[in-house]
Image 1 (cartoon, rainbow, N blue to C red):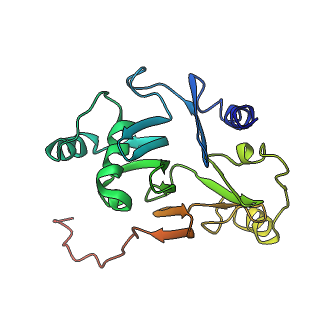
Image 2: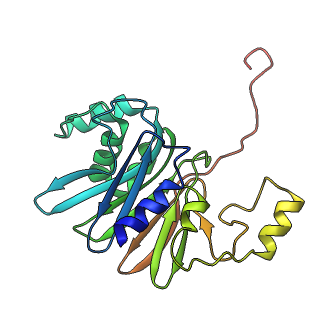
Length: 223
């Protein structure tokens, strides 16, 4: 069943999330989460769901949002109320408020996925420098994603085909690699500072930030 498959995939992440698991299964989406409890044991349960008259939003998230309090205040000023002390709730409601532009307001390390049942759209994002991992692939018209490759390989009939370029990079420049690629054929990572949108129109990836190099003009004393 979908539930047992999702649990099997999530169990591959036990070492990173040994304290609790959670699952969300609807018509077109199945989300699983393994949690390491740090803040708000009850309030931070995932997948976290927010219901509205026009549908619901569900999030699975790993990371830490450093500017959580500032975001929270801004959201309160815009009519949002909070039931927990978790940054998961802040992130989810920030997305509900800003949509894909939420990435421009985040300071932290993160990878997350949010399902919008009203638009039937999945939004995924990875932090600016790629501290938190996020992998994905397509198999038989199904989009499969996880924060570790070994969870993806628990999906039925998932091929483990080594990629020539990936293997060359592993031996030549490893552990560095070309962003976006893995050592496996047709399995990719969401690049650092990128977000992705999956909906009925297709799959779209967009860069939201880049590191800028500028001349150092300050004097020795100023520096």
